[in-house]
Image 1 (cartoon, rainbow, N blue to C red):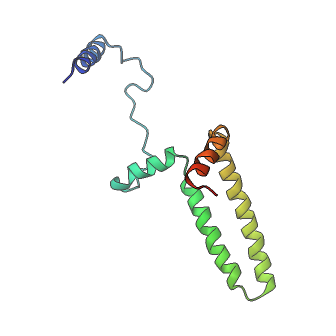
Image 2 (tube, helix red, strand yellow):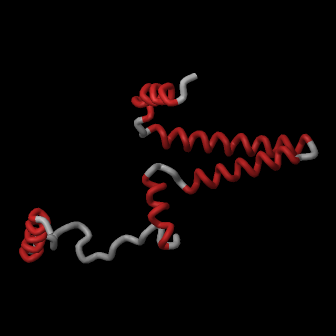
Amino acid sequence: MDFSFLVSEDKIKKAYKDGEFNHLPGFGKPLPKDSLASVPEELRMAYRVLKNAGYSLEEDKIRQELLSMEDLIRSCETEEEKLVLQRKYNEKLLRFRKMMKERTAGSHSQPFSGYQKKVENKFFPK
């Protein structure tokens, strides 16, 4: 063990003895339920990484629905059926695009877009 570990452990123990942790918000209350409690243990970390990266299960669900709707539209026999499915497809597509736009709105994609183009040109010259 290194010196900094020992010092920090001693400070934590001293603060605990002095009661400095007794007045923290949530003291004595149970921890909140894990939102991923229903996910198998071996997949939880992957789900957390995806969630922290901004990926949501709802996006994936909508993406899968869009793909299945495309297949249905291609296999339609009547124009009326095709129009109804196309209308539903367009609504889902708009919802999906709005969701993706909201997800990227808070990201730093705008400042780095010039940098991204330079990297792409460097590795994939035209």
